Each structure stands twice: as C-alpha cells, then as structure tokens.
Image (cartoon, rainbow, N blue to C red; front, side, top):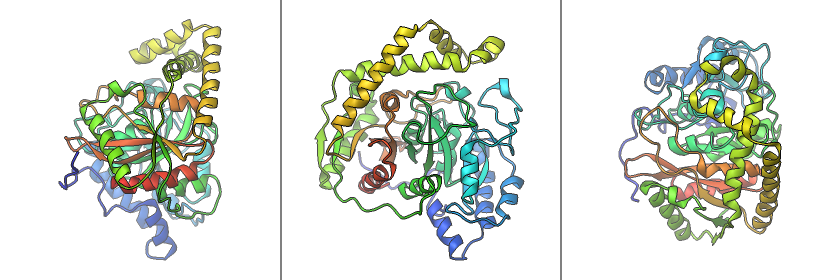
Length: 432
C-alpha cells in the first residue's frame, strides 16, 4: 500500500506540535515556560475542539493556574488529558453516563496525584463511552470527522491525534486503548494488568480493566512510564533487530481490505529491514480465550454496575443493559472455567514468548468505520487484554482512504520499557 505525501487533514497534529519530550527539554533549557507550553495546548484545543469534540470538561483557567505553581519532576509543564472515567476534584466526572452528570468527586484518582507529583498539568476530562463500554460520545476522528475515533478512550485518542495534548490517559477492558490509537494514528501503551493502581477510576471488570496512555512517539510513552514508576528518564535504546513472532490470529477473516493490505505491507517492510520474523502458529486455544474474555467481562460488569442497573436501567444504553443482563445469567461455574482458561493462556503465552521480544498482531480490523454511532470492533485486543500482557499500538500505515491503521505488539509482563524499545524500532520501519 503506497504511502502518499498528501497534506495532513486540518484537525491532525503536525510537526509544529511539541511532543512531551520536546516540551520537557525546552522547559529544562529555559527556552519555554510551563505556562507557555500549557497555553499553546489551550490554543490548539480552542482551535480544534469545535470539530473534534474530544473534551467532556475543559476550563483553561485550571491548567493555567497549575502551570504557574513551582514544580519539578519529569513531567514539569507537560499537559496531560484524562479520560472521564478518572476521578478529579477540579472537574466533574460523569463516566460517560447521564446517571452521573455533574458528579463531583471529592478526591483525585491515584494517577492524577501521581502525574501532579511529577509536575504534570492535567488539562481536563476527555470523552469516554458509557462506563467504558460501547455507547459513544460525540467525539470525531481528527483524520476524518465523519468517522469514529474508536472507543472507549475516544477523546484521549482524538486529543493526542489533533495535537491538543501530547499525552492522554485511557483505560482498556477489551480494546479501549489499542483500537482508538490505531484508528487515530497515535501511539498507545496498555500496561501490564494490575501494574498501576486503579484507585479512583470507575471500573467495569476488575480482571480486565487496565491503565494506559497515548502519545505521539514511543519516547513520549516511555517518559510517562518513567514518571509513574518514579524512575529517571532516558530515551529508549536502539534495538536494531528485535526478534518478533507474528500472526494475523484466528480473526484474520475479520480484516477489511485496507486492514489486510496494511498488515501485509507491515510484514514486508519489517522483512526488508532485516528484522527476524517467525510465524507464531497460534493454537486453537485462542478461540476459547476470545470467548473467555467475553464471559469474564459480562460476569464482572453485571456486578460492578449492579446498583446503576437496578436504579437507572432506563437511562443506560441498550448495548450496556444487554451486557449486564447477560452477565447475570452467567453461572459461577462458567466464570470459574473462563478464569481457568485465562490462566492456561498466560502460561502458554509465557512459554511462546521465550527467546523473542514480542508478538506482532493486528491492532484493529482496519481503518476507522464511517459514522459516530458505533466505535468499531475490539476483537483484535480481547485475548491479549485477557492475558494481561503489555501491548503497544505502533502507527505508520494507512488505508487507501488515507486513514491510519496500526500494528499491535504484545510483550512480556512488567517489561514495558523493553516493549517500547522494540515498538520504537518497528515504528521507525513503518515511518511513524
């Protein structure tokens, strides 16, 4: 699939939008103030928001006031968007639901406190689907505002793609980070499950809910990881020839024409770059894991949102009500069997990843679908999210309609920096 050189659409970030690493470097060098860095992001929001509609709550006075405070840390002066599942004292947190319209938490979530401790500047709340499931908000894809940005981290992907913020937090239960990142052409890291506290984040399925974030480069993803882990930051090392397994998985028939062509082109580019590729030959177990993820999500969601369903069924989206009703019919035995399959899958993947750096799989079926009434299919992320391994979306490929399509890398648990280093190399080959 030839990559044309047509100008970027007007709502997509261009080379003049600072990355998080560039912002940090310029502030440390005295070339830029924290206030100016935040003001530039505010200007971009004001310029792009009428068309993209990424923000649920945005008040420029709040980040500007915080930017004036003395601060140190890896994220000093860097603007960061927050998915509206994340509790904040400065803004209402509605969880994408009319049930919680105007809800004002009295405490910031752990992740908000963590970035503020490192000098980061929360910019506001970004649109999420209803409770992180399928009912979309108003956000449009910056590459084509007639298309979905994906979900459930819709506003997070769109805000980064449009250059409104260099970093934005999301969460993933099925495919809520990797899919929108693929659709919007940005980088995303879904961390290892349970690596970071979800204190203050509205949950859907505790066995699956996972924190992650989006950025415009692999090094920006790493900067935020280092900040959360309270480590010193160093740019990602060069990995000239990472060892990769690859597979389109049992879901290959779901790839649309553009998705299949992008997948083939990605493999071709990696081969031409001399990167060793080994066919993963994934087992039939994958199909049962796919269904196990659905079973676990339905069972846990029906319990996590039981109070909301009992009191506000008529104010909840039809798809969510259907999920919760189904979850109530799932037996304890079926749930336990699904969890046993997940443990079996984790053991299998740990064995399969021995001696290699990552598994390469599609990130989404293809380009972002037309229309804003749905957010696309999370199928290509369900299994990997169930197993809990860290995952990265690597952008750089495009459909014939000039829409982004990503590649997904699945890495070793708790080794996010290693995975990001591999992803950076794959991104270089893809031209990201």
